[in-house]
Image (cartoon, rainbow, N blue to C red; front, side, top):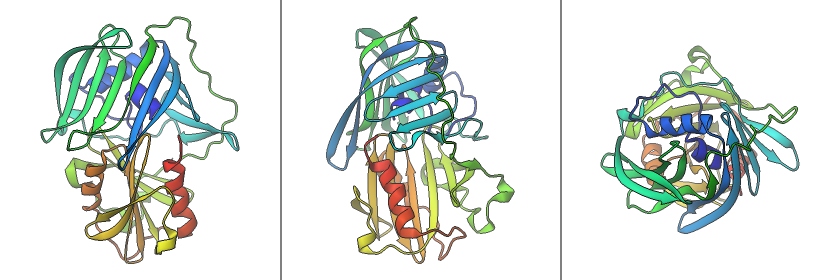
Length: 327
């Protein structure tokens, strides 16, 4: 979340060129052009519990390193994370794009709401609305355009996640671009052409709330369909099998999707929900507010079977717990 927030980048790199009224495009360019360093407070809500984590970040020439409970590195479009057991691991490789990603202006409205101050710097306050609901509030450094605070809200106005710089130096000429670690484990997803997507998985091309399919990927034999609405991205995984009550992954909470039992989970960078229908288990996850995630999940067409086969208990539990654990 710290990397995505500071870079103001979507979870899938390669969005279409934004128009001049896209404040996130301005922030991405600022992060690529402005060396900076500082510390941020990251917060996210898991049900009724609000969590916080403190991170140290530095960036230059489009590369950003965040250090906290774990280390994460962005170098251009590539994303890597570090864990003590396996070292540096590729989360999302460079070169995977999403051609035809919707523009922000297609479903959102932006409005400048005045001025403010964050960590001693003058800022512009920008609100991003969807269907009349405030979804995000950004504070951009007046001099450089760098995002110094980014907050996401649910439909009721409660903060769901975000970050704010507690201390920052902009620009910081002493910062060198973080270097790519030697020999990271490259096991990230691989892009699929439309013809390579199994026929049974070629729909839906659209989901509720304006989400349009923008890419298909595979990793470890699992198909990942990616949808975007111009601001957020969602990944849909479908796995053949069933979930029994004792298969419920850790750190999840009960939910309902179209009357079906579901399990919802949160992590610093987003939300996820798992539910079953027939012999298929669905996992939908992304950087959206939780109320919108459930609305979109209800629009997913249900299939009795899927072309993706997997050892369900281990795969589903690993997928959920890898995201809902401390990041």
